[in-house]
Length: 329
Ligand code: PMV
Image: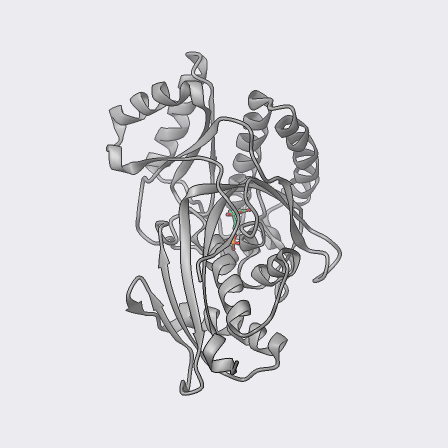
């Protein structure tokens, strides 16, 4: 078989929401984090990416949701494809067709599913046979959070000791726990401060950064115990506190910035309020204004009813634990 006849691959990867966040790099080029993190892969949000390497192309062609991608976004993908080409020792350009079932750049970690799918599709299409460990390592070079999206369920991204050991490790792949993450899409516009910029400013200037690293270590240890024991209260409390500490880094950075908007604060207040009324739920938030609420199945209906008083139904998306990457072709 010639290279041309087997040079295509299509992959679906799901996004993940970190319960103990990654917020800062020790090594910018290799995307080695300052701390280990832990996430839950979700079923509702995913990216499908098809990669075809073609001899006749003079440059990579990237099509996102049917439209050609140009500028910095295209450059980021080409840079990633350069890593894949180097690994394979092949100098050939690719056509990348990708579609997202995630509101792009609105804090639902589309880069996680995006680069996990691209790592899977591009590496296979160029003829590399990577196992999941190797895929996770490769996905990390595109976006840190993508490291975890190779696997389903609860996944730890171990900081490691460098390129080889900084990878995702499944913690509990098959989640036997009826829990959900309810995403409230408070704003679909693109974020102003990328996570790359935001975490760098936080790490370089927040006086609390040293403390953040220490507490992440403690949070990770404790959340693993809570997850294993299906202790929802403990897991939720750790996730909420960890998220707020991450956002405290942005507020205490120089220049200060925030991903909160008025609606984000409204949802947080509602969550506190519901807890007082016995509807147990916890929030988390990433590099965008959308808030994600952790809830057990028996409280889902009540939570949705409350949210519907303030938000349109189509802005409330219920997700559950989801799978790792899948080859579609
Ligand atoms: O991998 P990036 O650059 O999309 O950064 C992700 C950062 C957070 O989503 C805020 C936290 C995390 O661990 O996913």
